[in-house]
Amino acid sequence: MVGILTLKKDIIWTALDSTEFKEGQKIAKDIVTNDYAYESLTEEQKSNFDGSNAGEVWASGNMSVIWDGTWALTAFEENLDFDYDFIGIPGGRTVVANDYMGISKNTKHPKEAYIFSKWMSFGKEGYLKRIDIAAEKGKVLNGVPVTTDQDVLDAYFELQDLPGVRSAFDNLDNAIIEPVKAVPGYVQSRWEAPTGVSISEQPNANIHSLLEASIKGEIKLEDYLSQINNLANAKYEEAKKAIE
Image 1 (cartoon, rainbow, N blue to C red):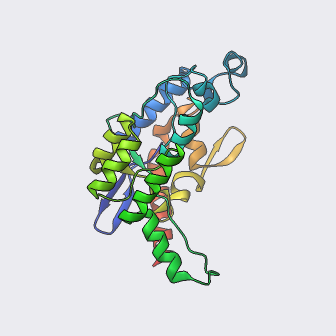
Image 2: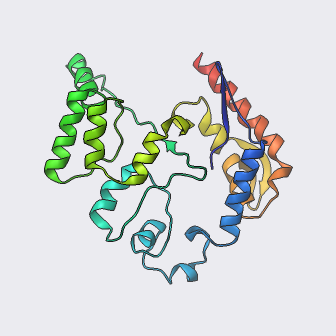
Image 3: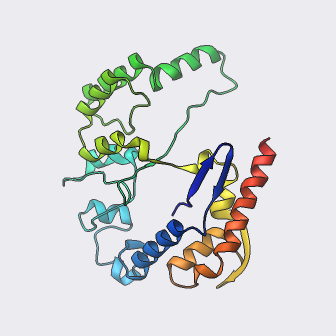
């Protein structure tokens, strides 16, 4: 579950009381309470499948859909014996997770490290070399190129021919950027901020526990939406001010 994020100039706010978020919670609750998800099954029900977790059950061919990213393509290519595709999330959209490269402050060659990082990540020559190595070794590149250079894209999709990945790349303008690494205070706003609400054995449940309890049918989220929406936005403002 990801809160709806709206960007307007330099203002970002969550809309946990929006129609879209309510609908998303409703769909999640339907999946969980009807036992459409592996994790919602009882231990006895889980024992009927091959595997000790959702990933293993999916790999054994006993589950139709699993949530994962392009970083898993290497393992899929090496271990699966059935055809699969990348389908994105409902509505034809894709969640983009940004990864970053870092240079140690202890390096003796920071300039060279920076140049090499650029060369290997979004530099044309460097990325084409990565593709050449992957093709030579029979490996899968587990991420899409960070470039719009047509030569790189043609070479990449010749190597990585999974139709869904190409469709997701072509539709990047409609993608959703994973906010956890970029939005100030998101970890607090989405997971860790205490709500003051008592749930089961938690006298002061955090936002994550509240949302989880709602999709399990243990509480009515409508009773708390305004409260957690204000709390989430307050945590964003606190983190934003701390950065400034």
